[in-house]
Length: 385
Image (cartoon, rainbow, N blue to C red; front, side):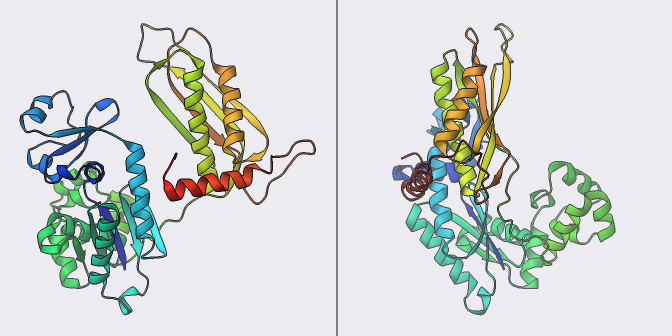
């Protein structure tokens, strides 16, 4: 059996953790630069605030209805997500973190020893007590059906208590007849319109289609989805894949003309890449840095360039990668430009336990225990403490 655990209105719920007086009060969270709405509490949804609503157009409505507006705080959301996922991992050895607020758990053989309804209710209470974040849990024989079960749990919280288990054919058919085809996991608006034109309006209508037709019109991916909804597991939990390149790039909140402020940001990007390398047990041999101006500002002179710096040895040390990244930045930077974006990309990735050193250069042995200590502290007390 698979469980999909989904944090309810995650960004808004994170803000409420430290502002309990905002419970049952409408909340919206805005995107970078406070552009548009990216999260809404149930109370805000009830007032008709759509997802993606431009903040400036809805400002009057926010004020009229006393809607509390928050700028996005991704450091907070990342930290709260880590707390939730850490708690979830204690309930199953098989976990796939699907997004910042969603995770799949696999319960292999659990149904022989546990009542999964009670087990899921225990998980829900633990996460709520340990983090203050409300969650919904859907359990079913396949990943796609667990998504369906989660949707039922979230849509009918009073009836389900936030937990729904599809453990019978009757429940499966009932849920599929209820779920609109556009709300099925993996069915986008384009496929929804095509399926509607063939009088497919629910998930149950979809599984009634012939396999050959589904494969022809929705490819093998659509066929796998159909089998999943039929209760035939075809999607397993995804394990962490080692990447060929790791990138951390950002558009700045404002344009910068001095190298020091850009160097500070590039150093942060290098640290992020180093942490990702260590997490997957890898090192890099090449660091690429890029820097460019705001292409949309036609009134300003434009400049953009990248540089590749080869490391002297395979490394995943934050200290080393900061040094190489800032060296690259110093070669790229030119006075007189307004810079808007930069990034660090690490490549030439090799396993950490198979380092190839040159005759005359080697890494500082103190970096290894230092990085392990930093990672451990970040994991236990929160990022960037």
